[in-house]
Amino acid sequence: MKREAFASLETEALRRDEICSLFGERYQPENWNDWRWQMRRRITRLDQFEKLFRLTDGERRGLILASEKFSVAITPHFASLIDPLDPGCPLRLQVVPQDSELIVSPDDMADPCGEDNDTVVEGLVHRYPDRVLFLVLDTCAAYCRYCTRSRLVSQGELEPLGRRVDAALAYLEKHTEVRDVLISGGDPLLMSDASLDQLLGRLRAIPHIEFVRLGTRIPGFLPQRITPELVKVLRRHRAWLSMHFCHVRELTPEVAEACDRLADGGIPLGCQTVLLRGVNDSVEALRDLFHGLLKLRVRPYYLYQADPVVGTGHLRTTVEKGLELMDQLRGHTTGYAVPTYVVDAPGGGGKVPLQSRTILDYTDGQVKLRNWSGRTYNYPDPVEHR
Ligand SMILES: *Cc1c(COP(=O)(O)O)cnc(C)c1O
Image 1 (cartoon, rainbow, N blue to C red):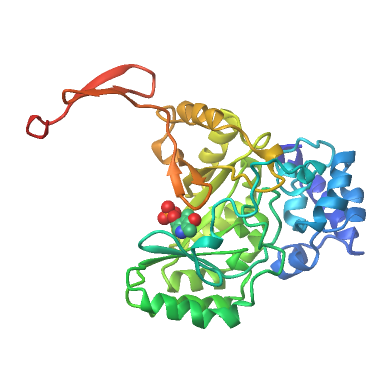
Image 2 (tube, rainbow, N blue to C red):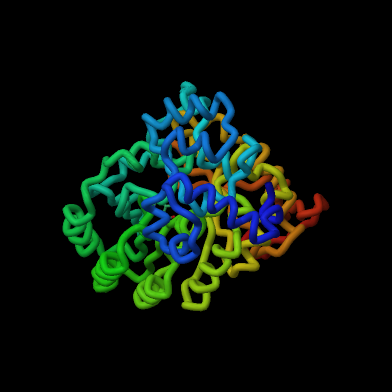
């Protein structure tokens, strides 16, 4: 079901009513628009899924078995966007487990990006010279089945932030080479406004830290969380947001409102997308998503090759396919709508950009270039540097 199928407000209200009835309630906009109400009414149990969706046997088995390894949860907001009848629905594939999650290939890894090796203080990953990744929470509003951090996230693996924050900040104070802190998790926007304000304030008080951003899927899973008060906190500390969207159907009117609030509040917005089989591995799906994001003033930042996380093989597509898709975007649409395609190199190599060959030959100071349409051109290097 496309969002357009919800063209009538009655149909949308009916679906919301069905979701609320799981909790013995009727749909009421003031509840629906309250993010704490949404969090308390997440869909987590098989019997709830049975009532909302026509499940396949694979999904049923996935819900019983896979959920033991990696939690299942979907916010009412996101659940209302999922096609109840189509198991191939691109939103459904991202959050409803399948029994394929039980298949472990020899190449699969628990920690594909090798973060544990670069962990300097619990939850603080220092890999690149000038920037760190700070995992503040290990919970999310909903769980992406391809999560690169499923070894930590939803597992209660991280100590509560309160116990770790002093050690992390002490490390950052001492390491004057760190100028950029990426706050992620789990989802940092599940922190209360007051805790987030305090954390950002303490980071900002460190003179050498000049850039702070938060990685979050809250704008898509729980747009109700983007309140004017939250925007004030983010603005006060000059934070950037790296959001996560995978399909244009996630860009609902509520999400547009949340992005408007953020952009109007002066928060620079980027999007990280994971290339997923059956979800967005077509040029139409990617182009529609990236165009949709630009309309919301969100700059597509990275397109990730899916990490080889344990039990996610069914959602991955090949690098060859990714390169082909990128070739069909570059030059064919606005440069701002084209993210950098990267693979996080297994074993801790960090992000490596992927691009099909544009330098065909480089001899005697002549660079033979291939342009977006496949034609070749020569660039003569400056003579004195040959
Ligand atoms: C992705 C990542 C960063 C930030 O990288 P950018 O390319 O600046 O977005 C920093 N540290 C770690 C460990 C990362 O995985």
